[in-house]
Length: 68
Image (cartoon, rainbow, N blue to C red; front, side, top):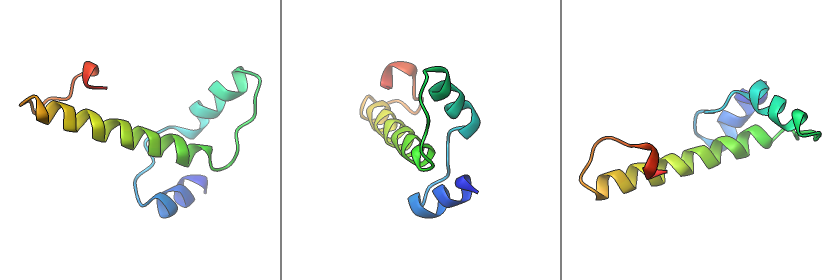
């Protein structure tokens, strides 16, 4: 349900696995809010967009780890 809500409000596909994200937060001794997955996914979208732009500006069609 959170995944569907995140899709609607962000307008983009959710790119992170919610249970895995929550496991990381829980292992650090914290709790995660219901809208954290949406925010993390948006951050990933932004990160990938920047990486794609960097690769293209360098004349490449392949995004590499150092583009992040």
